[in-house]
Amino acid sequence: MSVELRPLGDRCNIQCRYCYQEGTRAAATAPPRYSLPQMLATLDELGEPFVLFGGEALLVRDADLERLFAYGLERHGVNAIQTNGALIEPHHIALFRRYNVRVGISLDGPGSLNDMRWAGSAGRTLRASARAEAALARLCREGLAPSAIVTLHGGNTRGARLGVLCDWIAHLHALGVRRMRLHLLEVDQHNASRGLRLSDAQNLRVLRRLRALEPTLPGLRFDLFDEMRRMLLARDAVSSCIWQACDPYATRGVRGVEGGGDRSNCGRTHKDGIAWLATERRGYERQLSLHETPHADGGCRGCRFFLMCKGNCPGTALEGDWRLRSEHCATWFGLFEDIERTLLAEGEAPLSQSPRRAECEAELVALWREGLDESLQSLTARLGVGVAPATAGHAA
Image 1 (cartoon, rainbow, N blue to C red):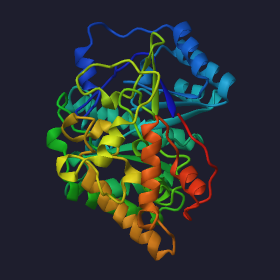
Image 2 (image 1 turned 120 degrees about the vertical axis):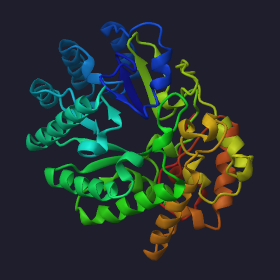
Image 3 (image 1 turned 135 degrees about the horizontal axis):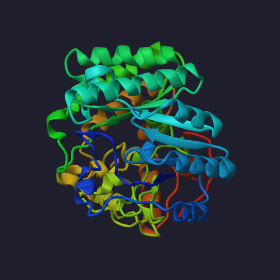
Image 4 (image 1 turned 45 degrees about the vertical axis):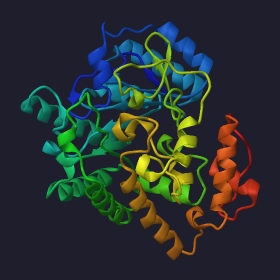
């Protein structure tokens, strides 16, 4: 679980063509405001490290940024921020160093490959992208190498652009970047993403190319491939939210704290333009339904990767309906198959091929019916399924 602190909500300095926040941004009736005391009070209640998020987090006043970073360092010893990078100035870098801030920069490639992160005109977009690239390079030079978050879409992977993207990733590796997060494009009715959408076959081709690139760049890790490997081996004690049993009304991977201190869910689930308040208790209706629903009707029944995938992110559900599986199902299935074959060739025993997989599924489904959950690592250890060592335990 991560806590996303969003002082200015969805407010941003650019307008990405594919932004999943566009619906709530368009529906807003008043400009976002924040109260430091109210936000800090909620952070005190949660007692967890937080990441400054947006929209664009660097639109927050510098003095307030410093106060939030000082609080994070005092309470948790670390801070984090996700930014598009275009607003980073030398004084921000000084703050990042002083307050131990881990920086994630969302950037889809060099130059025109980042054009979908629109800044109002072609010229302003190119200049904003250049500023973000320069800020990333400076952070690396100063020993504060950020992680990079890349969304894959037609604008940065079609035709020769995929080769340019791979060369750029190698360049980032040479600068010192060691962690990259890959996102598949989320298509929503509120944004201009439909023309950027890749087919399942195209997504899979791109991901396979990047997976082949990874071992040629020593030390670089694409979180996505590592997590999928770990899910297959039931080593999921630390995994990102898309592989967890997410309730769209109490999102498991993200707890939002808005500018007024109120709690919110992950913005990827706001399909109707309304940012519903988070409920206090998670439910597992989505996973229970997907487990029983045939593939032809939008479910996951009989899929050998269900334990690892669980229908994936409700924010990418078919037709924007969280009750259905992810629209990227075929892509994930193909990639899980690839990694499964690799594990088998390495002499590993992926859970997807275990003769006791159905038993594990039945046990997890029974827990969900009781409003409980358990990691695969814990569950397989408790049942004595020989996949990976772990410590048992339930989570409500």
